[in-house]
Image (cartoon, rainbow over all chains, first blue to last red; front, top):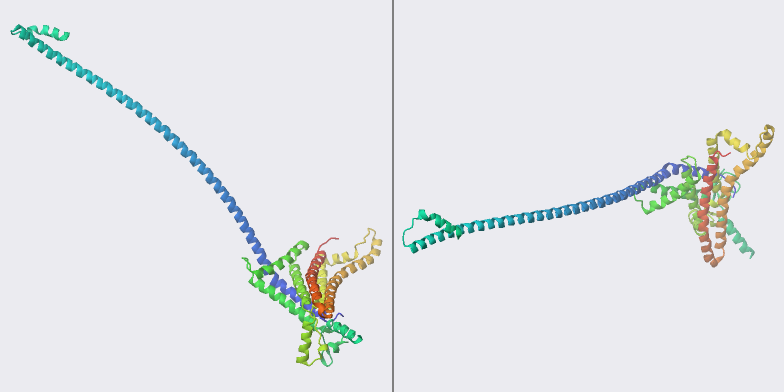
Length: 156
Length: 285
């Protein structure tokens, strides 16, 4: 139990061990721990940032999608309007065309009728003249009596 | 009965005796021949076991340090780093100065003292009996004259050496940080002080006495706390080992309890070292 030279030996051993630990053990271990801590810290920060970026991108995408939807519905609305407009226009045009055609037809019929009437009148006149000729049994001067015939025709 | 008692006490005595070595006029001498060699006696078992364990500590930690990566650590590296971080955290929390020495010092103390204390869990008779056998067979010695104390921290020389190292560092840090004047001032101008010069001169010896006692008490308490705890623990292991079959459950219980003592004493020694050095390097007064 007495203190003796062992004390000196142990003291030297202690100093050597601490020196060795200070030079070759502590710095690499502590350095590795600190470097890893830094790495993990950076990694966590990066992942946080990426998460935030992702959130932003998601928001942006949603916004853009919404905008696109609005735009699309606007375009569809416009197209519908346009279609209605075109249909209306075409209908009006068709109507006009129809009316025009009908009017044309009417006038054509009218002129045809007039022509036929004229022709008929001519024929009736001729017929009347022929009839009169037959009745009279003599040659009637056509030119001299044309005014009578004309009158007759006009009365028909 | 009387004879048996003598054997028991000599058995215990045998367990509590270090293997000694000294140089005499006739050359190197061992054990009983060294009975009156005075200070220049070496406890070769304490020296061998403590230095061996210290080398194991350095080898383990050095091999972890060499393989350490900043990437994903292996299990071995994780374990070593856990110890390093435990020590490092305590140093950072307690020691606020800037020193490259404190943390490795604390790590060395913690692990080395822990390993030395751990030898206490080796059943008390194994290694001494083995040493006696080897001594008898190889060197023709009387096995009762072969001593082997395998727990270096039960040798007061060991704990005193650690405490002395810490004490030298305490004084060194005090002088380095506060200057020689500051260190002497701390010893003499405190706790009693007076504005009156004459009164102050009278107070200085009182202060010096008190502060010196306070200063010297630190290494003493460090050395004796560790020594006392481990010596008592070892003593109880020896006593339990001497009571026959009943020792098995008792030994187990005491060993389990002792695990706590082993770690706790290593931790306390480390913590107090940090605290003392932190006190030595702060200008508080």
